[in-house]
Image (cartoon, rainbow, N blue to C red; front, side, top):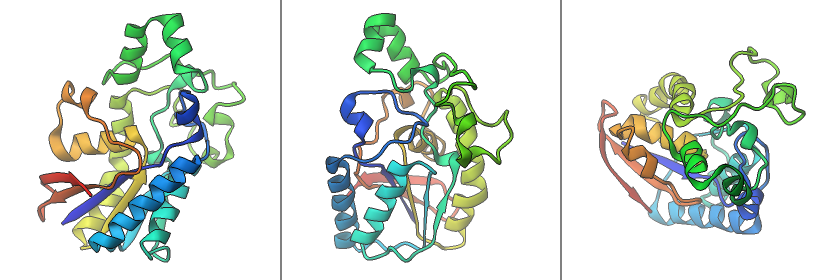
Length: 227
């Protein structure tokens, strides 16, 4: 069976070189075109889906919608869930990446960005931009909403959704599309493929490029490729 991942298209904060995380930003025109191109690739390659999973952040939802529209599948069920959100970048969210590196040093920022198990500084839950003050997370327990995450914590957050939703869909024979974010997809890929803690630091998924994971009937990894 084949599982398709798509990282959302280029966003407004990608363009501004800002840490985004759980902050909700829109796609740029480039991002929209990337999503359209991804949908056309899927259409041309004959990929059909029975269900699509995405996060609760606008850039992923819009990418999912555009991809499905371009591949003539906008009608299929979509499941939106916070567990597929981007990694939470804590107090770095909204900061310029270059300016942050100048303040804290390239090495420290690289550790915050790429380390598997080291988190950036927490965002104060009372901050107006904290997810604790966003109504899309109002029904979640307060201790579940993060103030900062590393990739290890992101995987721990994403894994229950894989086990409860995505894996059962695949095992039931459904053809699945997951449109999410760089780090939530990296976390899923780490689990599915079996990427080591060290190797995951260099594993990157480009925006708007359909990544196909071939799995056997027990969901063991077989191979991966981009369309």
